[in-house]
Image (cartoon, rainbow, N blue to C red; front, side, top):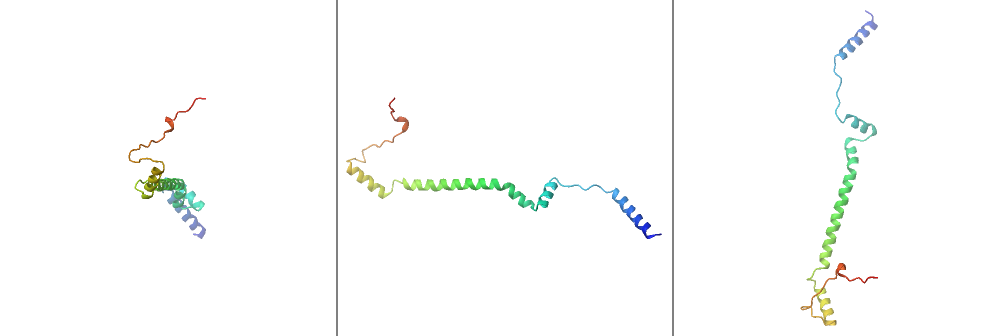
Length: 119
C-alpha cells in the first residue's frame, strides 16, 4: 500500500467519525463576551462601563445628602436659642429700644398676609 493511500484512508475515517458528532452549543452571552474579548475588554470591564452612569448618579445623590446634612447642622447651630452671645445681643437691643422681652409678642411676617395696594 502506498503511503498516500494510507493518508487518504485516515482522512476519510476521521471525517466520517466527525459526521456522528453533535454541533457545539454556546451560552446565551457567548457573542457579547466574544466581542468584548476581540475589542480587548474583559467582561468585568464591560460591566464597569455599563454601570458607570449608575455609580455617578449614586455618588451625586450621596453628595447632595451629605451637603444637606451639613447645611442642616449649620442651620441648627446658627439658630440655637441657648447661645449666650445671642442672648446678650437681644438684651442690648431690648434695652436700646425699651422693649420688655418677657411680655412682648414677636410676629413673623408672611408674604401672603401683606396688603398690596392696587395700582
